[in-house]
Length: 65
Image (spheres, helix red, strand yellow):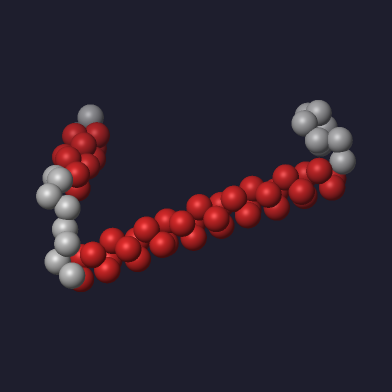
């Protein structure tokens, strides 16, 4: 509050609750997407893209820097 962004403690709490709701919404959406992917994998529907391999390669390259 002293920084000037919020005028009252209520504004701080309101903003925090809105942030929490947004985080929970994003997390729920991510869980839905994961469930879809898991179901596709169970049916053998894997993507042909080598995304994970590229991601791992990038992580390994970053780790060696």
